[in-house]
Length: 114
Length: 113
Image (cartoon, rainbow over all chains, first blue to last red; front, side):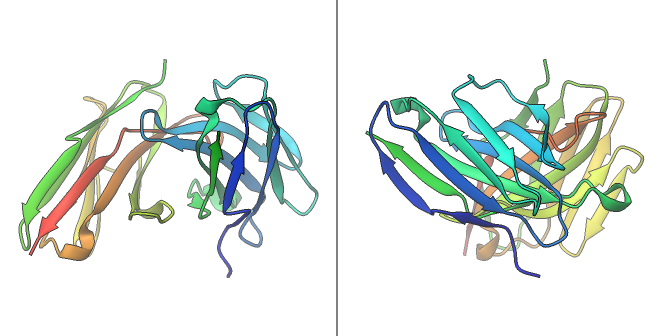
């Protein structure tokens, strides 16, 4: 099976702009979670989507939002970008079948805010 | 709140030696503990995991142990090789939290030939 894919791989934006990142999960995986990775804060959970519904949310401001489509692909959006939003944004998918908790990560989108 | 502490932050070993990374979690409802390896510029890769109803799990040169009473779990790598050099992250999932993983801060492992 193909792994988790994310587009774009790199983005440069300026403060105040908004950005949309995309994640395609492993075929058959219906749950997608998003994480922010920075050198200072490590890996932090943003939110999880399953069956087009947000199931869980981390401690991030409302500028961070997401959605999931019927084919399980997910997007996350960050509005009014701040310098501190510069990070690697990772998505991870899992099947949820058979009580599986295993999550598999995509390559990430490197966002730089100038 | 939920928290996972990971130690050490850096670890340097000679090729062939063993490496041990330790994590402590705060939420007693945690029931799943994965370990990820992240090489420079690459995605985190799941290398081993353990559930709360198991005390130890082994896969070739890597093993994970869990002490639920102490809320402590560890990654053990034996016969280390230079290709084991990477950042290792532990994580914990709490019951009824879906796919939310709380990660430790990471351990940078360097294996010297």
